[in-house]
Image (cartoon, rainbow, N blue to C red; front, side):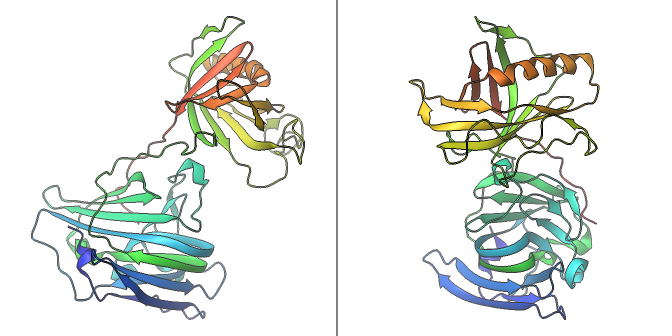
Length: 377
């Protein structure tokens, strides 16, 4: 049972910041399932200094005598101009600005309120952001028989997995932790503590939700080469991670050779597709031993009878470290294969297939796993 669901008159309090931060909270609905929704407007008074708010219990709650206790809530982003982190904190650690300590998720990282503890925890397709319309769920679970307390995060229905798995100290009982928001900028959000809670706590971050978007992280699982596309066996010791992302800006991918940090390649190349045509451009990176980068231009209006999208891959740039022999061989294969790829598709099984006349690269969705943190201080 969700203990927060039974709190019918809870109110939000601020961190007593003296920097003209603002907070307004009101109950906007009480639906047929008795899920009370709060609409909250909050803004930090000073750029770069976060403003924190916490939900006070009303009436005061006490730990249940059952073996399992749960707190679950969801925050829907109505409007966000800045950054927000969502999670739990205790009243004793609820303080102004960066001094608040707790267990938070900010769209990319897991933080304790002032420092990143896990980087890249969010869904790959979100590229490290919480944006308007997103729904963030947070589930705090106390298991008395095991003597543990864990926190699981959800982003738009996707379970990101367990971020924290603590041994429950006596002073950090379930009732001590309260929903807490941490904002730098201005946000309008909706809070609800539904009666029904998610049933999974296993990380299940799909690489892409849209079979035509291609964006996400992929693991290369099979390679074919030659006119007859015979299999090129990948060494079992080599893990190849391919990332396709929407570019965050319109400028080119700059090589970082020539005094800028270790990439070799041609400057400011996006792809051979021209601005104003029907193409869409992606940033491509592949990590083997070195990091290889290029751009992919897709011809949105051009496909074939099998559903592939035509592509053009720009010149490849790469870091210049000396990898082990197995990785070096794979990098040479990829360097030779990428320029001749002509089309790609996400098939009905969720595999990404990149195809050319003399090679084919088949990838499965890659889900990066993270170990749960044992503490947050």
